[in-house]
Image (cartoon, rainbow, N blue to C red; front, side, top):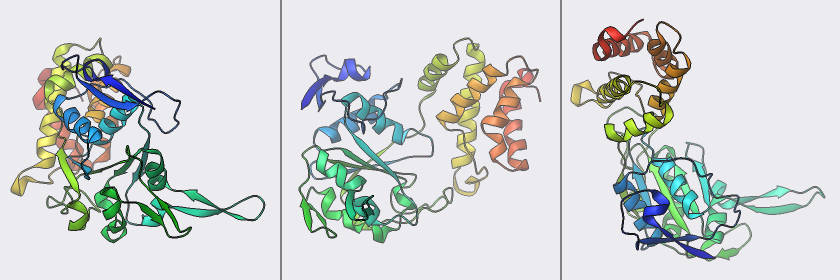
Length: 313
């Protein structure tokens, strides 16, 4: 059964109280993501809700840098609309048949067909969420071409034709926009088939504005001084600029501070607040130890510039 949800009340964003979006009625569906506290950004939310309401034969492709919130956006929208999600992470060995399903051995020695994530989503009107789709061999995804448009799914192994539920949706995420990684920042990214990409509408999710991240830090570490939180966000944006770079400066850092890493840094800093070098100690464990010695030193120099006398190593 379906149910209308108020956009303003459900997602906590400014919207007319009469503006609703249709989802599913609560039904203890195990495929519905767990609802977590989440601060929605208005424009990305608008694009996702428009797609969920009427895909018009499209899939939705969300591109953006690592840790910008592409996957969590879909999961938390779906959680509030009680919409089932089948998430698959792309990799070079993922095959189309992995999405469709397979025969498995039963206890009696027979064989039984088991639906894969694509087939379950098609049957039940759920979201097929293909994370890091640009890490998948494009030849394996050609089978999605007709399915994204809403055509029936043929299961060759059983000769069954599964007609898509009207609420079936396909969402993909990637660090690139499907044309390969021109920056060299992301290993394993492959250019995707142009025929498949032509079946997706695109949206971009970048790193949040400072005011948004400040609200997140306030929730995560309410006792931390505002001046410290402000400089944490400033350092995060400085690191991101060096990571993304422009022209010859691209790739000077192989690691970056996503919003999730920023929150981890703040929470660890609060945990280690009794230490004389809590900010530096926590920064290493939240991010810097993922880089080599030169990158760690560069990040600490940037932190020294941002924090001044408040920075101790």
